[in-house]
Length: 231
Image (cartoon, rainbow, N blue to C red; front, side, top):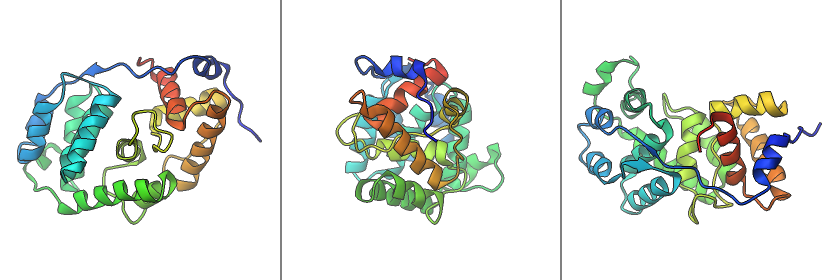
C-alpha cells in the first residue's frame, strides 16, 4: 500500500526550497558540561550567536577536515538540541562519558575514547556506504550509549552533506517529531530503532521529492517545518 501524500506537504514542496531559519542558542550550559575539552571549548567560541544548518555544516566540515571529531559532533548537537541547551549539554555529556548513571555527576567523569572512534566510523560509513548502511552501523555494532537515531542521524546528516544543506547524497534526519508527523499526517508508521524503517523512510522521501525535483533532505526539512512550526 502506497502511503498517502499529505496535501499540506505537497503544497510546501510546490515552490522554491527554503532553508531553515537560524535560531539563537545558549553557550554557557555547553561550556559548563564540556569544561575538560579544550578543542570543544574553542569550537563553542567560534560558533555564531544564531546557528543554522549551513553554519553548522560549515563548522562540522572544518572540524572534520582538521581531524577534530568531538568538536564536529558538538557543533551538530548544539544545532540538534536547539534552545534546550541545558538538557542538551547534559545528555551530550552522558554520550561522551558513556556514563551508566544518567545524572549530573557525569560532569566529573572522563570522556570515553570509544565515542570519537565510533563517531568517526559512522561518518566514514555514510560517505562510503551510504545513509542506510551508516544507520545500520550506528544502530548495531557501532552503537554509542545514549545516542539514539534521533541524534545520530543528525550526525550522519552533517557529515554527509558535502555539497551544502540540500545535498542529494546527504543522510536525512529521522527524529521523534518527524516520526510522529508521518504517523499522524500520512499514516506511515516507522519504528525509530529499526534499520529497515530508516530504509522505508529513505524511499518515501525520494518518492515524494521526485515529482518536485526535491532531494530527500529538502523533503525532510519541509516535514520538520510542518511538524514543529520552526521556520
